[in-house]
Image (cartoon, rainbow, N blue to C red; front, side, top):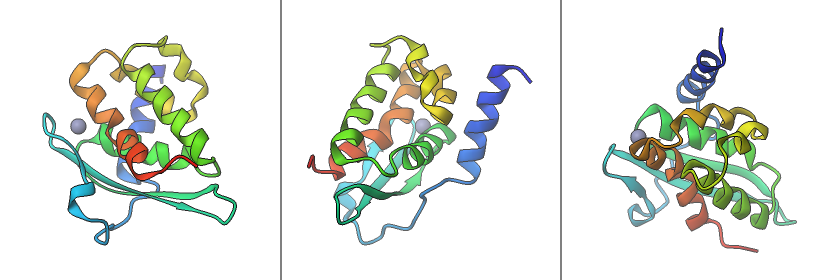
Length: 142
Ligand code: ZN
């Protein structure tokens, strides 16, 4: 299995078994983030413990494999982070996906490295970053 196939497997695993997926009917519809060019939509909810660290990132997503898998990987990645760390991660991830950083910057991001193939595919970059924009919106900086 070469690296591209491995990345494909990781991505599909997160799509089929999304970590953090939940029904979030209590979150108002206007909090939904949408990517109309692909038809993706997502709501994100962040649960924090008494010390302000992220206990869980939950999301309610409808859309393509890339948008759902990115949300699932984000949910895993940000567990235990402070709000400030989560904001920094989200901003950095978006910069990398937009090509404003070297692609290999994602190598240290665990499963998220599997999204490297999306960089410089402008329509798919929006799929991959949708959850992260929703996160920035739903998580006030501490
Ligand atoms: Zn999409």
